[in-house]
Image 1 (spheres, rainbow, N blue to C red):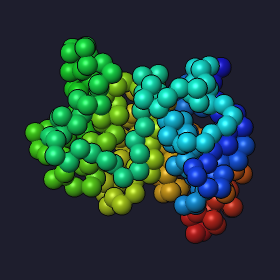
Image 2 (image 1 turned 180 degrees about the vertical axis):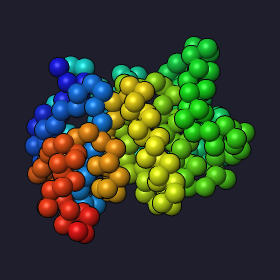
Image 3 (image 1 turned 135 degrees about the vertical axis):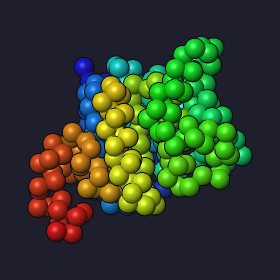
Length: 237
């Protein structure tokens, strides 16, 4: 059984349908990328998994349980962490306070929280240097580190990442590349939405291509990176 299985997903806000009959499966331990143009429905896919899209039909099965039957606030406790596009750190709180909020579901396990904190600070040493600094004073790249580290504080089984490289300098993107590989190697299953196709296909094992809310292509990342359609449409080569 797949860790996450999406069946015939239809999703909409107040207007036209955004996702049309989307089907995909994420195996335990996989690193999956979802790529596509700006209006393809990539973020809506992640928001649907997190229970944040008001109109959904179909099934989103996580360990066999249909997430569409749960309110959004109960989904993180199932083992799913979502890092939305735009970082959304708590600007007036210190870095460490932001991180501890990510471990809210395990707030009664002080030792576990400190272990998780030590792990994320090892992954992002720069945050250790700035743990008492207000998150709003950090650079964009550092705030993205806070957002990802905060999500990891709950020890998720599945990490949803929405455009983590957006707006970051090339050097920071390289650091992000290394961090994503380390997160996956630690045993976390990752579903990455990313417009930087080269980054996405270099870190993921498999990928799905969304176009106008439909899955139009899927396969191993290395194969898609060599696909002339992908190279022409997204890499300009």
